[in-house]
Image (cartoon, rainbow over all chains, first blue to last red; front, top):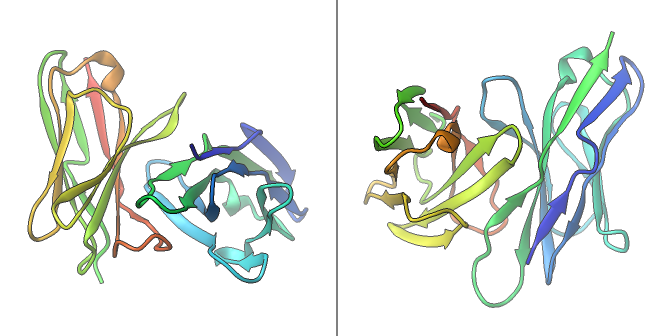
Length: 116
Length: 113
């Protein structure tokens, strides 16, 4: 079975500092990995995804994530945090393996608080 | 291109009633997935429909059901509502490929009293 873990319920960072939101995953085959952001009373918005190729993926709003197969991680990063980045962030995985089309599994979310 | 739309945006029901939620995907998208979001459980997968067929199903009781129409619009139904069904219900659409990005609607906030 596939799973994804976001070990931190909340991350606090000062405006202008780099931020990291952690994500680890477990799959039987190969993973497709996604990051989404959710602002209050809104649906989820896509940030970036890893399918194949370069381990460093760049996405929207200056976010990037690095796929690390040996550590089964896909941490979300941004060099300089903005107050407007404060939101709920979700990591998601789809297991790519034989035997059918698998669903997407989401982590429990990490609340990012950027302090002015 | 219009985004994913969900109706209604807010619903208040009482225990024992049933409810139907609607989702219209992005034009051209053939896959619709449904999720339940609660503060304690995060996003829980309900089911996915592709070309009117259920392609995947989560671990929810049979009170939760869904369907997809030939125009790709989808509905989900919850019968015999329980207090624990109070949640934000999100739908997401894609073209149907495994690597596709899911595009989410704004959700339907269901409150069961």
